[in-house]
Image (cartoon, rainbow, N blue to C red; front, side):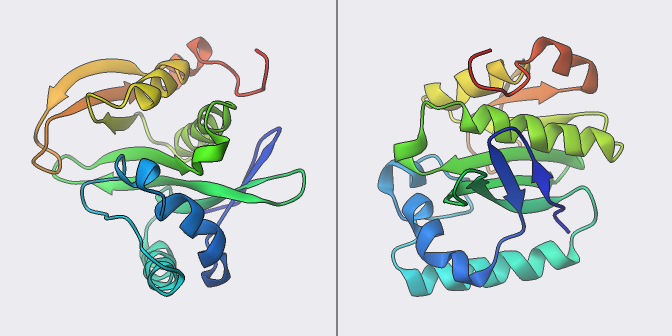
Length: 184
């Protein structure tokens, strides 16, 4: 089950069904949805978003630590701006981290800050590495994983039967990452 994670500007917390209208600003936006996991489509309305959140909440309750799904809120004002994940990825028992932010929040360092919080959480729970899978044309995500200190591993088709760029992060790599605070 997802634990509460706090950074300088963000609070990552478990999802609630009442988050549906705010979550829809991310998961219903075509510009965000085109980069979602191949296993998830754009959510088209608030009722569908509520069902997705109900499913995520149930899955989260059954997942073993350190896996989880988090709602990302701004600490200043509590505005929900997106989500973050750390999910087991068969077939190799890897853990994939990801994030989805409202388009209006892109370019502010929030994805890097949330990614570092999730990575630190994972490593604090004993994981030796996490991976991120990035579509080759998603230059924003590729830049974010590099800011996180992730190392490019290569291209793979073993996950989701889609050609993706694979990056990995190990605890020692965090020394190379920005510390997630703005302006650094």
